[in-house]
Length: 140
Image (cartoon, rainbow, N blue to C red):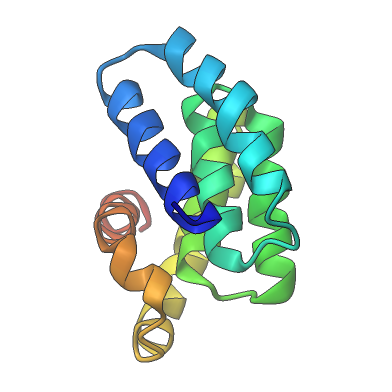
């Protein structure tokens, strides 16, 4: 199994456990398997940074999610996954004004970014669609 396949399987398992509300298991796998796996794959591309940030949210570590969102947006300011992650991280920190700002940026970037057809946009289309739907409900 390639390093990418291993990381993808661990990510999928973490997301499944998160959906089941098994936070202790999420934290264990994230800290002991997923993060070390990603460290062995550095430097990380934007897709892997998003995955790491999402795992940070699932593992209840806002600093990991915020750091990955910041890094993604520094490299690509309109990246849909970076913006969606920044929204989640801001909400997790309780910073609703920042979350609204990131949602506005997400809505403004949608058309141009979707036209890029990035592979990570296809792989995480559900995450993007959910973030856009939430932004449309909350941004006035």
